[in-house]
Image (cartoon, rainbow, N blue to C red; front, side, top):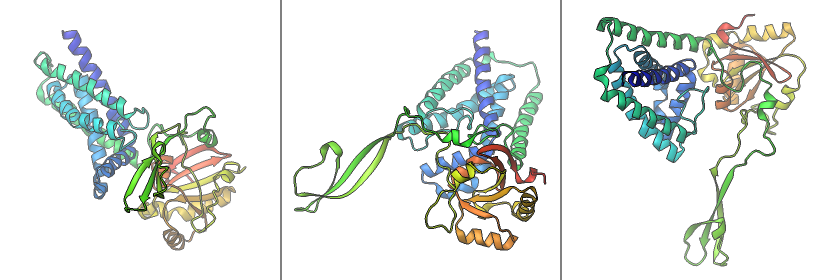
Length: 366
C-alpha cells in the first residue's frame, strides 16, 4: 500500500507540475483561453481579470504538484487538488457536451487534448485524488511544518516570477505553428485525403397560407408549393482537418478589393521585418515609440518592413502620424496575431516564408 500511495502521489504531482509549468511558460495563452471560457458563459466584461487569473491558476497548479511530488504538506496539497478537480471536472463535461470552447488549454499549446479526452483525464485524476484522500493519514514527512510551508510558498512565488519574466519577453519554448524555423506555406497545406467539414443545411421556410415559419433539414425539404424559401442556416456538425495555420491573411486596411498580400510576402527574396500589434490601442507605448527607429534600421539593412494589426484604418493613421512612420500596415485576424507572437508589439523576421527570428520589442537589438 505504501508503494501504491507513493506511485499515485508522484503521478499526480507530475501531472500538476507539468500543467502548471506549461501554462506558466505562456501566461498570455492561458489568459486568452480563460477569456474564451468567459465568452462561452456570456461574461464578456471580465476580460480585465483574465491575466491575473491565468497567473494564479498556473502558479497554484505548479505548487500543488510540487507539494505532492516532494511530499510537502501533501495532505493540504490533496485537498487543494480535490477542490480544483471539483471545479474543472463538471466544467470539462459541459465543454465536451457543448463544445463551446474547442480546446481546454489544460497543458497550454504544447499538448492538445480534445474536450472528451480532457474530461476523461479529469475523471482519472479525481479517482487518484480520492484514493490519496482516503489514505492521507499514511502520508507523512519528517520535515517541520514551517519548512514544508516555506518551500511550498517559495514554489508559488517562483511560478509568479517566472510568468512575469515570460510576459516581458517571450515563452522560453514556442509550441505554436509560427515558431522559429517554420516554413509557413507548409503549415497551410490541406492534404488531398484530409477529412472535410460535415455541414448540416437547415432551410427556413414560410407557409404562404398561414405565415408560419419553420425549419427543415435537407432530407425534410418540403415538396408542397405552399412552403416558400426564406433563408438557410449552415451548421458544422463535425469539423474536418484544420492545418496548423489557417487564418493568416494580410489585407491593406484601405483596400476595398480585399487583396491578400501574404502569398507575395512568402515569395519575397529579401528579409522581411513584421511588426505584430494585435491591437494598436493596447500596444505598449515604449514599443510604439521605437517604431521609427525600427523603420530606419530596416531601411539601412535593406529589409522590407510592414506592420500587422486588427485595428481599423483610423487608429492606424493616428499611430502613423503620432510616431512619424511610413511603413505599410495590413489587417490580420486578431487571434492569428496573438498566436504568431506573444507580445504587443512583437517582431518577426521572415525570409521566403521561413521564420528566422521572433522577439518581444524589448529584446530586439538594433
